[in-house]
Structure formats: structure tokens, C-alpha cells
Amino acid sequence: MRRYLEQFCESGREWAARPPAFVIGREGVWKGMVELCTLASGSSGNCLAVGAAGRWVLVDAGISARRICAGLSELGAGPEDLAGILITHEHTDHIAGLAVLCRRTAAPLYASPGAAAALAEKLPQLAGRIVPVAPGAPFEAGGLEVESFPTSHDSAQSVGYALTDGLRRAVIATDLGYITPAVGAAAAGADLLVAECNHEEDWVRTGPYPPFLKSRILGDRGHLSNAAGAELACLAAQRGARAVVLAHLSRENNTPQRAWDTVCAALTAAGAEVGRDVALEVAPADRPGSRWVV
Ligand SMILES: [Zn+2]
Ligand SMILES: [Zn+2]
Image (cartoon, rainbow, N blue to C red; front, side, top):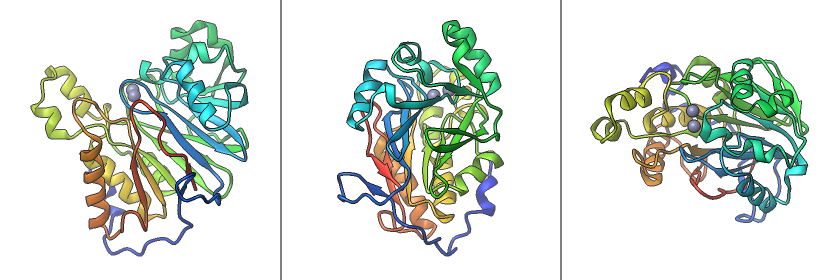
């Protein structure tokens, strides 16, 4: 694991004072600006919704359109309300439901130029709807300003996303082999961070996967471990993030408890009180998670 974040994670650093994050329904308070809800997260499918002022965009569509619509309806929205669908990369666990979903919404699809080309090859019927956007070039979707940042992953041109209403910012960083400066910079600006915690490194090493798969997962273009995800969480929290959602957990090489414990221990060691300074939750694999507001 590269140690890029050491320069950021000084323990004893004063915790940035920002308003806390809320879960709608749990606290009964609506104070926030940007909402985020994971609809599914993990190797069997990824999709999350980000909203502001009642308008929604999706990040990825890796579960069935039926499940996406069911998740949206829990948020009081439907596919016709979507203002955009942002694609991180063209792997199946991020686009499995996209073709069917696109029959139920006219929302534009946004992807990096490389992912757009790969997507057009996989789903030629959508080619005309894909808007290629270079990483770092801001654009507007659903009243949110969106900016993508490059991630290191074994796909054509993967990205993460930062979405802001001008005051609060949600950052999504999954499917990455290691924390590049671009990922670190994005996480440092997050009020709410969705951070990949894919696996426990030792579990992968000693597990039953064939060697090529082990080196793919553990490589620089694979997935982020719990320990690396914890570093990213610490960086974001120390810079003021009030909620961290752990995402894209491996079913074979991780457990929600293990991921949560690892990140909680790192945040605690860095001087944070989890639950007070920063909220921490694991995104469920097969159902919607909490409806966060920051
Ligand atoms: Zn992937
Ligand atoms: Zn993935």
C-alpha cells in the first residue's frame, strides 16, 4: 500500500468544525443540502443516488432497473425524475441495469471519454446518449455541480465523482487500486465520503482465489483494502467530512463488521470520536443504505 496519505494524517490535528451529517428518519431533522443513498454496493452491483432540492442523479447502474426504480421510489423519486446518470467505469457491476433503465428515463449519461467509448462498444444502443466528460471538467446535473477525478483501476478510464450544491460536497471513491493524489484531494474536500473498503489484504492473500485474481485485486489497478480505505476515511474526516460510508465490500474477502472495525480503529487512533465527530456506516450489499444528508 502506498503511503501517500501520511502527510495528511497527522494525529492530534484539530478537527475541522462543520455541521454534522444526518440520516433522514433517524434524527427526524432535515438540515442538509446534499443527500446520498446507496441502493446497492459490492461486487454484485453498484448504484447510488445523490440529490439536492428534490432532484436526483445516479452514480452507476449496476443492479437491475427494477431494483433501481424500487430504490428511487423509497426516496420519493422515479426514473423519470433523474437528471443524469454518472458512470464510473464500464465493468458489469456498474452498468448491468443501465440499458433497461435508459428505456425508462431520458436522463443523459456521463462518463469519461475512455469509459464512454468502452460503454458504446458494450451497449451500442446507448452510444448516442453518452456525454463524454474529461476528468476535472466541471458540469451541471440536477442542480449539482459535478466533477470527476481519475482513479487507478483496470478499466478503460475509470473515475470517481464529487458532487456539490455549492455548499456541501459528496465524494464517491470506489474501484481504485490505491489512493492517488487526485483521489486524496477529492476526499479532502468531502462533507460526505463514500470510500471503497473492498477487502482485508491477508484474507485475499491466504484465500482460495487463483494467483492472477489475487494480484489483480491487490494490485495498483485493483481495489482498495480496508486499511487503505481507513486512510482515505481519516484524511476526509480530518479535513471536515462528517459522514463516511464504506462501500464495494467483497463478499469473500471482507465482512461489514471487519471493514467498520478497521476504519473505526483508524479514526479513533487519529483522534476522532466516531458517532460524534464523524458518522460511519457500511453500505449494504443488496438493499438501500441510510439516506444521508450533509
Ligand atoms: Zn471495476
Ligand atoms: Zn466495481
